[in-house]
Length: 88
Image (tube, rainbow, N blue to C red):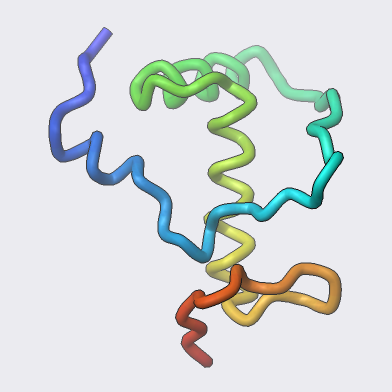
């Protein structure tokens, strides 16, 4: 397996607006999903490359896509305090 480079280490640092602010007492819940064997193999490869768990990889991808689609957030999900919001 390929070791992460210094450049990929820098890329792993999420932007401030992508950090989820957990409410006091909020806990992550165990969830399940359906996927083909090939999808799971791809997820394992991506997670292994970045040195993350499969769960962290999925959450990171979903967060990145969410903020790409909704830079100002939605009704329930607001950007972190102090985040720079760029209107499309």
